[in-house]
Length: 139
Image 1 (tube, rainbow, N blue to C red):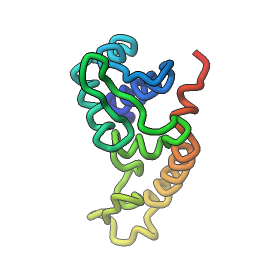
Image 2: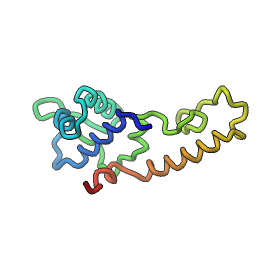
Image 3: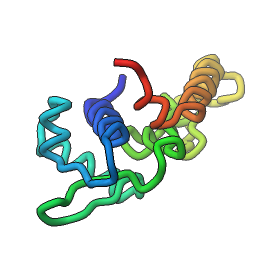
Image 4: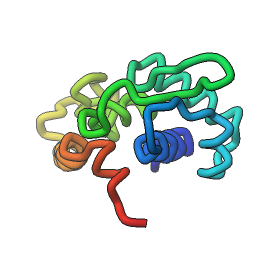
């Protein structure tokens, strides 16, 4: 299940991507428009800034902005920053692999085989979807 952190992060990124001009967007503006609790949004945007997806500017006309074009921001990167591993179980994770304690042979494990398919399908969608794809959807 998608966490609220990730859902709100995606909504905020989409809002920033859709904004006209090059001016940074204030947290309060995003929070009000997208109905996201401001304190929670501040934490999410800080995480996205630390990861390099967003930049920020301080001051009266400060706020957050995208560091790359929306067409260059892949959902795999956003999801890993906000949600963590994409795989549902650690034994099929590409970046966070861990052997399952309760599985003597993961190559014969039916759960492993299923979760590999789920991971691969999910990765295909995330790799082929950019922030531009989300922000260009009709409302």
